[in-house]
Amino acid sequence: MARFELKLPKMGESVAEATITSWIKEVGDMIEMDDTVVEVATDKVDSEVPSEVEGKLVEILFEKDDVVQVGQTIAIIETDGEGAEVVAESPAAESVKETTEVAAKEIESSIEDVKTSVAGLDTSSSDRFYSPLVKSIAKTEGISLEELEGINGTGKEGRVTKSDILAYIENRGNQSKNTSGNTPIQFDIEKPKKVETAQVSISGKDEIIEMSRMGKLISKHMVASVQTSAHVQSFIEVDVTNVVNWRNKVKNEFQKREGDKLTFTPIFMQAIAQTIKKHPLINISVDGDKIIKRGNINLGMAAALPDGNLIVPVIKNADQLSLVGMTKQVNDLAQRSRANKLKPDEIQGGTYTVTNVGSFGSITGTPIINQPQVAILALGAIIKKPAVIETPEGDLIGIRHKMIVSHSYDHRVVNGALGGMFIKTFKDIIEAWDVNQDF
Image 1 (cartoon, rainbow, N blue to C red):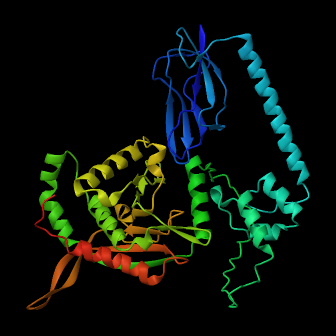
Image 2 (cartoon, helix red, strand yellow):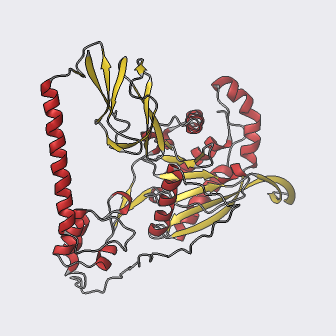
Image 3 (tube, one colour):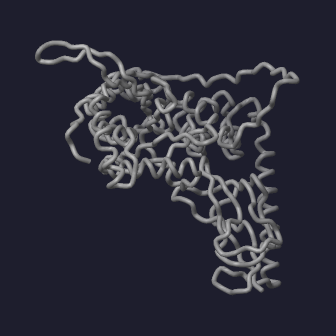
């Protein structure tokens, strides 16, 4: 008999850890090759970890809700076979395990020592997380909690890193100096104060519902986005009659030839990719006081899940796709989103996001920017309206298909001119749609 170490597999280039959400198999269960042993979650995507061997599950090393690093052993499976990844039981192996446990306890003790050494800096009144190292540096340098709260964090979820606080210390004494002789414009954004919420009274008819893991993540991301970006909106009405008529004409042939349904979404997504190419400064992100101009156009596509939450799969290099290619990508990602079959990499790397509020009947909306992007576009419902039609013979009244497009953008780096021109270009592309073109 031998012991196989089931490790948390790599699930994407930028994915370093995952949370155990549920164990499908229990200790003592017999496992076949490719059987799902455990389900894990990375940000918004749930994934299954299958077994690479046949055998008996003899040990589970992590509990539900534990965070596990990629490559860590999460379970032991007893097998009959041998292989490169099968670890035989031996006194040496037990010794290694004991040594590892001792080392872990020493590390934990060291962490507690660090925590104790920075006890003088009380951060309990802050909503922000500060690592023991950052608090230690702050205490040594005499940085107050108020100053610490004002430092722009570049770490995960806006956390202040070692580099952030060291950069702040380096420039601390030079903030009032200006070698050019001119007075710089300072943009001091006060951190929102913690709001004490009133206690909610629960009656006999009320029901308490725990927020889901995804709900908590979405809540945190939305609040962080509003606190980070200066949201402003522009709106425009688009005549989509040509697109509606063309789609009605070709949709049956399209499905017969390509095996996919042709919806309005890929048409609009392709037009948005073309619009971004004309206005590349909308395809950016902000890093401190620097602007990063993205080299690829990766469109995030907000998709509704059965439980009512949203997920944003990403169409990579969207500007390089034909309408057929875009349709297949949109349909595939939408179907796998609903089936919870997306891979972690497929919801990362977006540079601009599109949401279709019209699918719920809304004529428009004011969406929140998907950080670290700087803009998001909302497509409203397509509605028949009486409209003035300009002709060489004069103006006429006719029935047209209209759609309101809403554009939310970060006013720190995107001004009203760019925000407005962007949707004007999108409008021009859609209204110039050739009803006689092929697909």
